[in-house]
Length: 504
Image 1 (tube, rainbow, N blue to C red):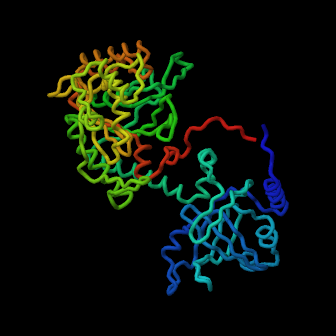
Image 2 (cartoon, rainbow, N blue to C red):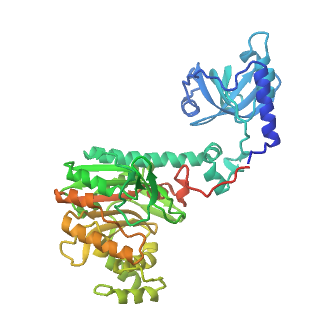
Image 3 (tube, rainbow, N blue to C red):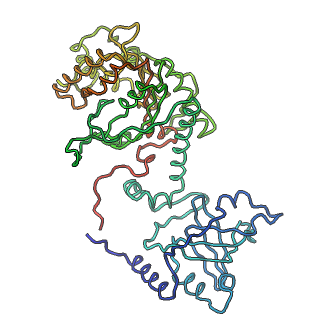
């Protein structure tokens, strides 16, 4: 359906028409060389010296206050807002006053993108401003921005509906300055982690997104078809198995910031497209990896906030080392009062039902334990906490524990009641790995849609020999939520997945 224009949109198109008639290009092609930013000027201007005698900026013109031959307005660039002062005789030094009388006064709309040149001064009211000597239209805005008012430092925002904000992130970023700050902090988080790993000597790599055999996690995939090869392909649910192939190939440490995709439910902690970092280091184990995680995330908090403490809702989260550690069985006993060591599947199902956990016939031993832990323990773990030593049934890719039969060398970190990372001493015995995959196939036959598949090429790679390896996967979006203090994953993803929109 064609969009029905509002009165304001009709008027803006009329203004565009008038600009064209007067020979003013509304969308010029030549570049506008920016030399300064609003933030730079506001932070560095000094009254006693001529700090900025010649500046060139570009941005959106807002809130024009026209007073005859002179006017004030606000210029918003990527760094902030600065006041500009424009006079007719400055920008129209000859006899032709069209640029000011018609273009600026009549046909310039709130949100139009302009270029200005001039010098910086302080007004009688004490506000740092730019005295404009040259003015140029760079791009016409054909839709009005939401009206936003500010009083005493408080922004009263007309664009606060979450669904609108996530669908039209471009508007959200324009009118809600804190939103841009959230994403800048996310960038700092990723940069901190990347720098940390690079300094350790690990290699950043890329692996396939389209995969003939999905694996590396327990999840439902998105499925597609490649026409030329006439074969089914899957969007990756994890990049683990490819990264471990690179360890087989002789690299000692590899990592990847990867877009992964899981065809599952959506809520404030889940988006079907999300970002993971996975790291694999040869000749290390999960004890070593726990220490590395603590060091890396403590540093990330410091890089973002200058402190290890982060506010998340009513909680103050502290990423300072060392973090608390429980085995999975210890955590369940601590929070339920029941020691599940030695219990069979039937006893576990009975315990689960007694504490209000729904159990069905598709769930095996490991799945039931996972459900008990998720219900009784996970929500109560607020500070960063390592949960270690999982049942082998829950961890098809992890190495059996060196001293605890029936368990594997695996840990997760839980924070504000949610898993933020997962790590193993990686299983490198190809015979044992095949057995684990076959057990997963049996769970799939019982109806478990998240059971892993059997990857013959990965098993072939293991048969060439993979050194003892520690592996790690961190959900960047969830970690960013905590580091930023965002209550929804949609707040840290520029363009989260949404239901189809009817645009009128």
